[in-house]
Length: 471
Image (cartoon, rainbow, N blue to C red; front, top):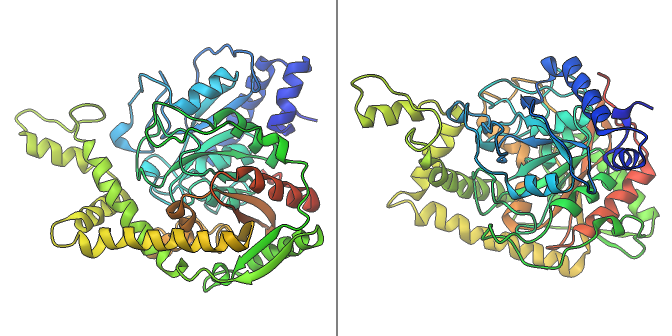
């Protein structure tokens, strides 16, 4: 077996046993990147610095980091021309914890600019391509991380999830992606897009790898004001539990208009597998889902408008400057470097927060967010988990939705509710439609990541899918 075919868990054990050295791992993954990444575009920056791994659970394992997560001494662009040459002076807490566990940071992955997008086509540098079909998108905004993991260009990766940005590319590329409970994983060092929604999460080849990554990155961080102080868990301990008596809710709204027949078929097959293992499913309803998309985009765009105001070309980042140019003109030209999608969201967010519109848009969205959270609380009194498709479709073709923002936003219809409610959710491969991967999304009450991993592992064990893309 090739070194790159080993899962994160298997590779870490092989490195500990001495079967391979960490230099072997770096060389093998480096060759894979050289062979395929000129076409796939998973990476914005490859880490060429000399690294010597410490001893730990991930000692010597190559990990990729989404390019909106700060890495000391290593360029962090957020997929934007404004930060094209920005080199952070510190590591994000999650990166620090990975390094303490012995991980090697192999590079920074491509993404939609400032994490605004569902296809990675909004990157200021280049679009990433899906390893299963290079004419299709890998999803976004953590598309580069998904490509790196799926194409064996990294043993695992970190992404960030504001409205589905870990789970959507995980579904499109046939990998596992977990969006943790809000506050479980530190956000310190994550370049902010929408503070109240986003979480950093692992993107891995299988469920065991996901649990291992969570063991490393989860936990309280005093540097993050949104971090929740609670006992740390061993997520690997949940993988061998059974699901007898598990109560499974299947909201009919997750199979609404726009859900492809092939996606619905594979998701229902997984539900019946869970039933055969002792689970009990019931169809139910999540009436607030129809309000989720406008609610999410109003809140996210408003927070983006506030967060991106700091990019003025004065403190850091690129500055458009010419001799004799006054400050106002320089500021305007600097911010013109934002891509079209970022400009759209900043303008709409500024409008929603403006005098005369604040109560009618942003404040109303916050009230609906509360209703959505209460809807989930109601369901979790009746069910242990909720399941449905991660995304209503398989990966669409490059360029197919770029000119239609509303069609692009609809990609997030099944994922944004989870961020609004602050609950955890995982996407696990559950089959194929037209040769492309389909993701099953499993949702649980806050801090029940262990339950998600149990259910996802049972699906993975039963299906035994071949998730090696035809590179």
